[in-house]
Structures are given as C-alpha cells and as structure tokens.
Length: 180
Ligand SMILES: CC(C)(COP(=O)(O)OP(=O)(O)OC[C@H]1O[C@@H](n2cnc3c(N)ncnc32)[C@H](O)[C@@H]1OP(=O)(O)O)[C@@H](O)C(=O)NCCC(=O)NCCS
Image (cartoon, rainbow, N blue to C red; front, top):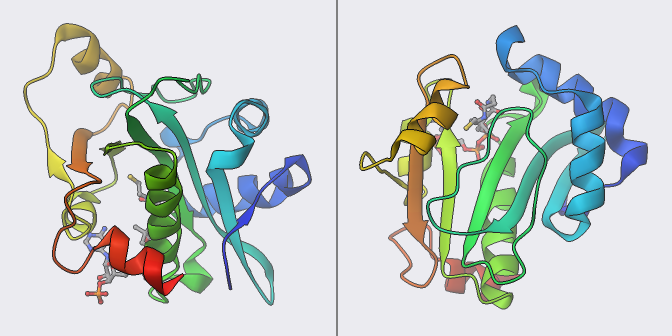
C-alpha cells in the first residue's frame, strides 16, 4: 500500500472518498479536483486497498502565509518555500491503519527533496490534535485576507504550520526518508 500519483481516471473514486469524509458544506467540485490534478500532478497522491482507491492527499508548493481557499484552484509556486497540504482524506474503511501518516510522510520527503523548508495547512472538522501530533502548530497572527480565507470554510478552521528542516519527535522526516 504505497502512495502513487493520481490522475483524472481517479476522479470518481476521489469524489466518493470526499463524500464519505466531509460534511456537505465542505464538498469541493470534481472540476476543481481535475484542475488541481492538472496544475500539480507531482504533488497529489493516493493509496489503494483491495477495494480500490481508499486514501488521498492533495498538496502543492506554496509560500509561507498563503492560505488555500475552499474550492480554490492550485497555483504551485516555482520559488515556493512551503509544502501546502490542502486535503487529506481516508475512506472510513481504511482509517486507523496509518495511511494518513504514510501519505503525510511521503509528501514531506518529496518536499524536502524539492528544497521546501516549511509545511502549512488549514485544519477543519476538529482535526487540530491530529495535526499537532504531526508537529503542526496553530498560527493566530493572521491578516484580514487570511482570516477571510479561513471564514470561507464556514466552520472552525485553523491555519497550522511546521518546519520541515527541524524534525519533531515521532514525526521525523529524515528518519522516514531513510526508511523509504
Ligand atoms: C483525520 C484522518 C485523515 C486520519 O486518518 P487515519 O488514516 O485514520 O490516520 P492514521 O491511521 O495515520 O492515524 C491514526 C491516529 O490519528 C488519530 N486521529 C485520527 N483522527 C483524529 C482527530 N480528528 N483528532 C485527533 N486524533 C486523530 C487516531 O486516534 C490515531 O492515533 P493513534 O495512532 O495514537 O492511535 C481521517 O480520519 C479522515 O480522513 N478524516 C476525514 C477528513 C478530514 O477531516 N481530514 C483532515 C482535514 S484538515
């Protein structure tokens, strides 16, 4: 069950997983999914089990302080410094197996290879503690534009970041890269 790159053939499965993982107000359009796959094909991965695709992670290279709106397109930054995790979802049948952790670590390794020194995300659906366990911390010093972006999620949402060049206990990207 190794992460693999996703493509437009995966769109029906991606949408199915999304509907199992997010409340209705959070659902993003399949067209937006397709645009992201086109914009950042090297930064989006999934994992399959015997039932097909069961987990996905959408990321792209960005810059510190740039937040990604719900239903927004990806604009990968050529000179970016930050791995932005936009959407991580594991089908309920495959939760608790470490697949989320596997996808996150895969993304960290890829980002480190690309020279990105930070990672950021917006935590929703009460996932803050999950992200804290992976070394992310909530940033509260936000400007008006960033606050407006968080408000667009229409539920409690937090901007969280972590360095990629300073591993944290239990979430050491270098150790994981060595482990493959
Ligand atoms: C959050 C989510 C990605 C975790 O996926 P997963 O494959 O079960 O995660 P893993 O197996 O890698 O890790 C499981 C660990 O995370 C913990 N965990 C899972 N969801 C959590 C949450 N919301 N808050 C705190 N801890 C959480 C589990 O308790 C478990 O801890 P343990 O290893 O100490 O027992 C999955 O529940 C999901 O897809 N949720 C719906 C979509 C979502 O909310 N995504 C995040 C939006 S920012």
